[in-house]
Image (tube, rainbow, N blue to C red):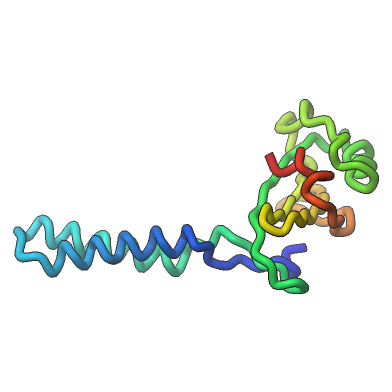
Length: 148
């Protein structure tokens, strides 16, 4: 699933970086005291660093649409019930078991604009999560419970 969805800049990321950079440049250019110039350099550098580091959106390699991501964690003992719920009806997942363990992880990529949801279950194997289900595609009305 990680190969299908790549991290990209969202509009929010670009705006935050641009505002910090512009504020920093304004502090540097303005005829003010040295501490304000130092703060300006700091803001400009932080804006540049955030531009290159902060990527909070995801792009689907197959369709090209921009998506958001949520993650939910479940105990490993719930593997069968979570996998069955994902394959048939994702609304039937018992969210009361969420965050009571971290043996399972559900990655949910969604777009509220297009209404597409992509879900995959991962199992924790020491040091990383390995996929244990295919990527399921749903309409947002059918999997709305997973994106909250």
